[in-house]
Length: 222
Image (cartoon, rainbow, N blue to C red; front, side):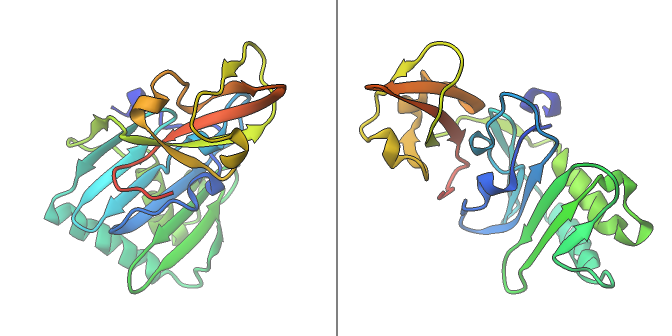
């Protein structure tokens, strides 16, 4: 499952999922790794989202998956978060060590927590190991219940720009200039377009646009 999802997202930027909202979310992780040519961050979903009743979602380069934790696993997550909250001197900005990784961990609820960590979790100091190990586990999350999901909808983002190759005809019921901040479209509308971090070039009259379609998790409100 892990290799099929291509979970190592080379150009995922934290801003790509920053505005996403999933009702009932307890925890969310966004990841930025060193850039790679030809990858568009707005097409990638969050790396990991955990909901109140144990349901979770995992995002890859082009696909999404989901599963469910049992009660004991949820308690284990809660215990790990408590250990992180008790770390001495922990602030909202943390340096783990060498490396170009960047992680944004959000914990929601009555006692919200948001941490932006940079560097490689494997090189973190012993005092930061509770945080580093959680980031590693969520980044590479695997679980027996994990199954691919067929998205019901996508977030379409259109930006001024040109790509090599041919140009697709704009076929949606709104102008590309109205999708700079994203427009939700159905799976049927997205069927013939590249999805995830792969972008398409669309044309309307003499204008060219770079278009990405990000698969949305069930219940997600971008």
